[in-house]
Image (cartoon, rainbow, N blue to C red; front, side, top):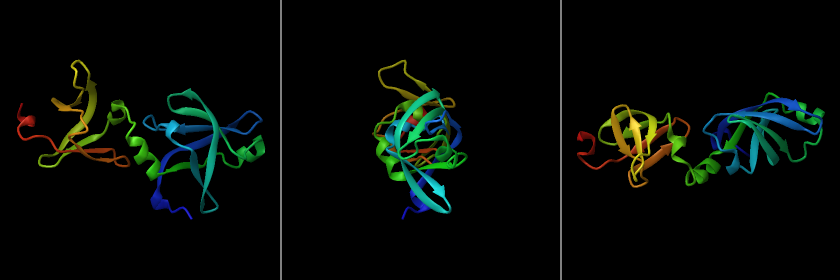
Length: 166
């Protein structure tokens, strides 16, 4: 049985679209639908997985989805307005394939200096991409990232001594 603690909220279903069971799926800009085989919806207090049959994007934060076994508008309507979850482990596995733009808006927490600020933009003007955090430039390198909290949008880093003094 799927437990709430295993899940991460990624969006919600909207109205039906057409007569073949398509649903509008609204999600946050940083969610990558391509890493998911299935969604989890809460049906009568039970978390139920629905495998994704197909999807097509309407915008950066909206897609039309077909779920396996949902083949007509009345069945799709039953799933309208539901919160959409994915298993936390799916996001962790996908983290290996994240683009750096995913981290825009994340707070940066350095182990000895605490919270440094929010990643405002990426500086790609050099061979080594940098996170722009206020006035600071921080290397966007796996070598310095110690942990990623996807839920709270916090990037934990451990930077070499003196780097923040530059």
